[in-house]
Image (cartoon, rainbow, N blue to C red; front, top):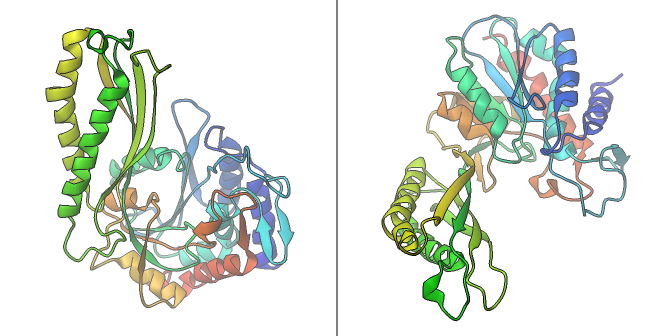
Length: 387
């Protein structure tokens, strides 16, 4: 069987696990673990508190610090209300493309790693190659956040990470962070004719939004010199505001969903500090004057650091050697890469498939892209293992 045929079969197996973020990923993790163990890897399955989700961390080669992590997430986005042409969890091949949920984002990369385990085992003879396959990337990088904390506490730690997100096999050295919040405003209902007798949660949410929009202008002014991002500054987005019942009822509850995409983590700290001060010093005292039960609570959906472009980046340079590329770009979407960088690892993103196909009905990855990904891993024997 050819490597490409083996990869196609493995990807079909992975797609068949409906590892939507709202469901368990244990089936996919068990399948991956079995293949890695058969290749001689030392495998750890790290379950979360629910026992329904798990990260996998595995190592080929010597038990020492250094080496490269090949990383990807096992969860996929939902398929409900999407007009698929075929069963999204049964991979279908048409015209050189493999269709199915997760083929592109990002089980395709995981399949190429498993299909090339023989080569990777040889490449790991002198220094280790690690595998990090996570849960819940699509809902806040929850799995990677817990995994990097485990790695942070170990004396033996990898030196580099390659995240196989779909980039059309282009080398990517940077992206903004992604921080998502849900803020709940609890006021006091009453008749609309006497607004001073209640606490209108929607009005206070609107004032909160206005403060965020003021901070948006401040973030533009804080734009780092020479930033290569588009736009070059940290952005704020108001995603949704829900609240109230009728025209003549003071709204007792409102829920605001918003996000921030920081260029540098200092911008995240600035916004969080400023908005918390506005709540504590202005909004909440006013609300409590009328209703003792008034409250503003913030739920952190996810706070994921961006991947900061670095002048010196051993992982990027390795990706250049493996792909033949001579330049690295930035992308607008967020990944788990910044989490690995935060614990001192040189990090790069490069993987098969186009991000334009991710999260859509009839998601696909081309056989050509999978072939390029496997060729990259094949070259590890010369560019990595012998050094």
